[in-house]
Length: 267
Image 1 (cartoon, rainbow, N blue to C red):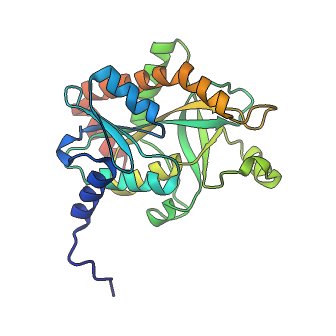
Image 2: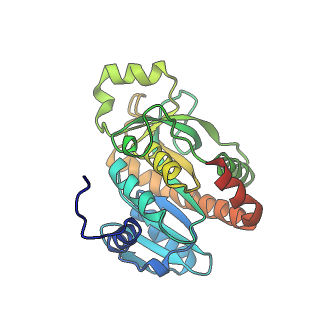
């Protein structure tokens, strides 16, 4: 027997949660959503577009002119699951794009590289509530192709692509057994949200993609992110990261007729 929720409807509750967490009205949200983990992205977006920053538990900004909203939902899989779940109840949502940071595992990766994840291993506890454990966490490949095309054109360098691992184990860098596992399975990079975002988006029928920024190289000597190196990363790369994300959204908007149909069909 279900719990009495005082006749609350899932859509009503999701929308009210989104309003409460962002300090925004549902009517403020654009059809295209950029997600991030850090306030710097929201502030830079506001500066680029003239949008006003609002905040609840999370922070966000909305550009009506561009039909884009950006949300900083913080760190970790539970928050990632909440934001996509709630966004799925927006009536006109078209695309979600994550601009995240991750630790590079593959020897060929360098700090500042852009990575497009083709899938992510689900080593976290949220996605199991949305899809069975044997279903992979994958993005929309149509969005991936646009991301790859935009990054290659704008930077002159093709982005790295491959499989990530998402974990809620924050201090894994000191666990040799865990490190052996990610090396054995040729994991390209590691983060704390991507698999959850992809899995919940799949379950809730939300087209999603991601451009990840390699922010540290935790398996190399001196490669674990520090307060000082994090500041350098923000100053050197985040504005370009955001510009690429906006350019990807603009490309999707230009192809909205054919594209969104193809996005929906992938689910």
